[in-house]
Image 1 (cartoon, rainbow, N blue to C red):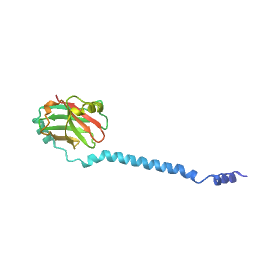
Image 2: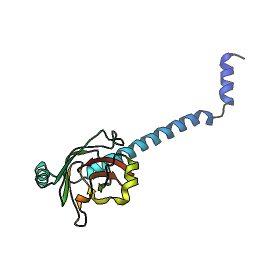
Image 3: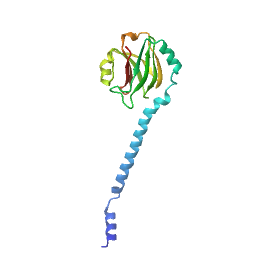
Image 4: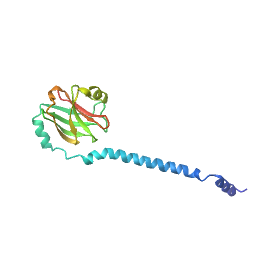
Amino acid sequence: MSGLAAGRAVRRMAHPSMFRTPRIVLLLASHLLVLGLGFGLGIYLLPILTAPAAPSATEVAAQARSAQWTAQFRRDLKDSDALHWGQGTVTVAARSIALAGALAPGPDYKLYLSPEFVETEADFLRLKAGMARVGDVRTFDNFLVPVPDHIDVARYTTVVVWCESFGQFITAARYR
């Protein structure tokens, strides 16, 4: 039997599905990868696309003039990373808290006041029962959050931004 005939015999004996299986697996893996990337980008971009207009620098500066305390959000906190961070000046007044700066975009950010400084998820979860939830943070460049009447900001020392949906620490700043 010649080499050509032997090759034909081997091809006839091989089951057709042997050649399709790797292709199907490759197609399935590539489609799942693209789906995962699209989902991840959607989670990241949706809050940016749906965010309301951020308060102007003038509005934030006006709040800062009536603030009793000032603090700094920094990117170098223990649980802050490339996707979870804040930076800028936070001002705390009796009826409002403002940021002149930026936060990493994300869904469902909440602003809390804590009686102790927090810089990790573990710290936040340990102290959450004693914290006051001030309100929603809906913008990522500057924010202005009203303080409800029942919260006395003088009873706390630290402003914390927390992602409620994913249970993720974003940033914090000690203001007194």
